[in-house]
Length: 161
Image (cartoon, rainbow, N blue to C red):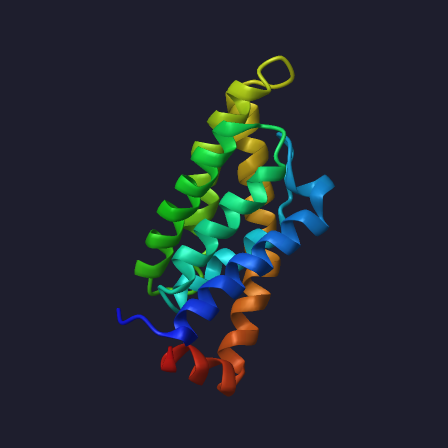
């Protein structure tokens, strides 16, 4: 993939939008019960692999606000990176939201179960994260996907990146 100002700007914009959405909805974005609105953006690698670094960087920056501490700065971006790479490989739009749901339920669920062990068990944290991801991705994520698919100028933009 060739470097360009346009690609760098796109990556930075994805990171910035992710951070803004996470922080704007902060009460829902952090803790062992999460409904992170910004996770809707994790369907973007279905359209372009350029979203992968933007999402990963966005999660890293957003997790600076997390009460889970340094573990969230390590495992949050790692989970996002893995899920985004897997999403970019999927060809079926109905399956594209699954990698973030599954990967975050496992990695982030375990991490939150460890961090908040006095409040929640690991299986409950995994289930909580998975349900939140499932809700966001299969509502807001699919809406975003359908908007992108139906807008010719957006499709053209992604293809020209």
